[in-house]
Length: 206
Image (cartoon, rainbow, N blue to C red; front, side):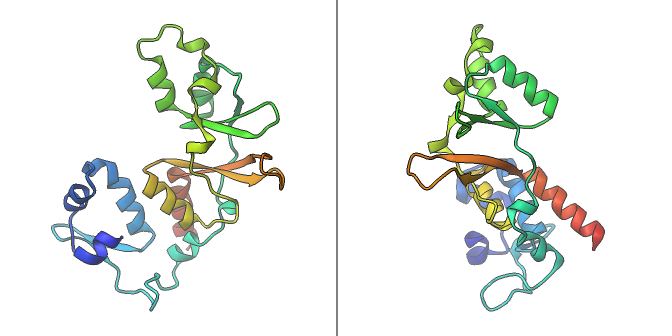
């Protein structure tokens, strides 16, 4: 957003070069920013900020803006959860049966311990004939390295985190207690696919 504000109109290739990434890596993110009505895009011109914004730089009231401001709890889907003692083989089967890109991994008390994605499973499986029997607790991305959202965050908040972290989804969590070691419980998940579906359904209703 800051690059477009300072340099717009600017092409996707120029944005990618300034960010040090490839054009395909940011294509979906730019598309979502256009869908959220933060940016406009024109062929052979590039991306630029929309003109219909208020004095704070926020989009004027619109269907897209209203959808973006929905709380995550109204947009999230049910999390697919596995224990950290489950195996890589179990996770692969669950990913395909549930048709999801990642699984929430919890400990024996039900606290979120991490996330395991298709990329994690592929990485550990390459050249490792014993990978199928490895425990998820050994291959997951641990909670300390995860970005999360709460049910009270907005869809826009979630999208901002996904775009900034270059990830496809986020676990939705709530505290399990007031103690420092109480941990968090995963109550949902929100993904870029979820957001696109949300905007599509809003446009059909509108």
